[in-house]
Image (cartoon, rainbow, N blue to C red; front, side):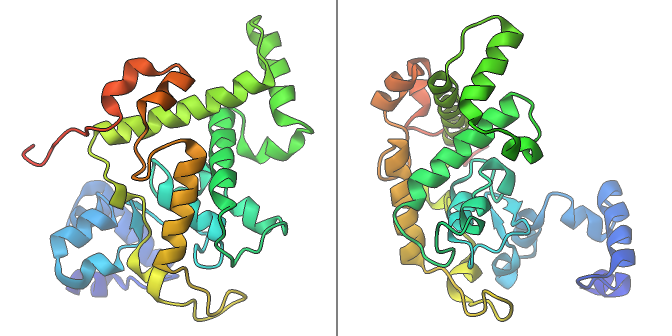
Length: 255
């Protein structure tokens, strides 16, 4: 695009980035196209532009490479927010050394679900995620702290279940707003283009691997095979009042 060429928009060009940020904030020129994110911009441009937009649910990929971090790949694909590393912190599973970060196996579904619930509780307690390693036994210690602050009795199991409840409500919100099973997925390039350099050189995640990991995640969550929350799961979590959001999403195609 001529305006992008004039700005000199290239990876690593700080001055060009500052100019683009100003244009985005004021929605002038190229900034008006970019102001609502790369998915929106690619849809307006059309053609092959969609293949260049590295997003999940409209949120661009963070600085963690999903092709060489298979837990993170799953976490990004299923996150209600889109490609957000903070909603699961699943990259820690890959960096821990306890899992082969290049292997997409069935264990990751339950592990990523637990990581999401943990991150949700941290956010709800307004605890900085950089403090997550300061606890010896997080749920026990956090439950004791919460009990002392509120004067209400909290157990570690109750706190853990609260994280699951909150995460489930996020999912139900997305379903109500039009989520479809195909939204839990990664950009096509992640599934077909191997990493060209670095310690993960040659790494890629196949559609079959991603599909199997997503299936293991849905199973761990107690959701159905398409990723919807069944009513029996809502009863288990005490969320039956939200049953209308479990299966039938709102049709906003005519909005």
